[in-house]
Image 1 (tube, rainbow, N blue to C red):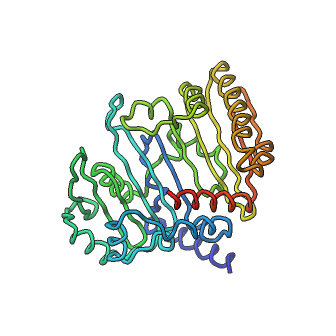
Image 2 (cartoon, rainbow, N blue to C red):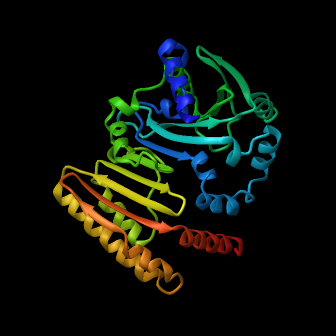
Image 3 (cartoon, rainbow, N blue to C red):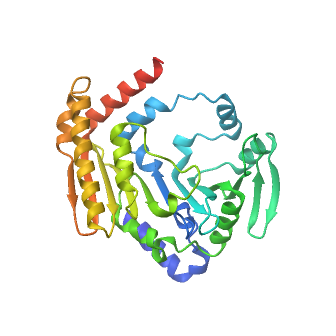
Length: 324
């Protein structure tokens, strides 16, 4: 059946390429993105390992307004959304302001979604490449958020400029991020089967106001300081069903920077083993199997967390959160 489907798809593309312009979420990553994140929820749904995480989190929400919106819109993200792509792009080359885009592949009831948005004050607007909805601006927000549903399988959320650009890119068959930009080409370093990943152009991302920072812990601060001089960072997780493979890589042309990152990562692993040996001793042996390696242009770290260990950790984390 898979071979028959593939043959039909190839034939259709050969006969009518213009009718099948690529317009999924992954094809709409802006060319000038400084950070990109992808989560493949469809892969997580089909895995017993990720299903454990879904089971722990699907019923939890502290936002009554969000839950009411989802009910009105007839949307269940863990069931209806297959892929979510996040991207940020600077508004100017040297500026600190950024546009953001969230693109999602899935199954969307456009009529119910738009009705739910309008009932909450969204205003419908028209553009050259399709309609979109401007959300009411909340106090403290410097920019208006907008939403668009080009079809029943694609949702776009973000700043107005980013969504308009995505609509225009969709009309022309997608962007060239993955083939013509330095950051896009670095995606090839990420496991093609990764369930989720984050890719960051570090120098450019550091200029963005409000960009995520490393945690306040000593080890987090040390890793953050070491990574300031790398050019690109990629972090990804691959759910294999019986384990969760975790990997990260930092790129740099400076050998001193690479040495600092390598030493910091090795030190962080040692500190983590000491920190968990009392409350979660099963993690010590897991952390011992993580490896740090270095080449002339990169430093990487990788390891796997067994399914049972991951499930235990999720359960403990959820119990701790519920007790607060």
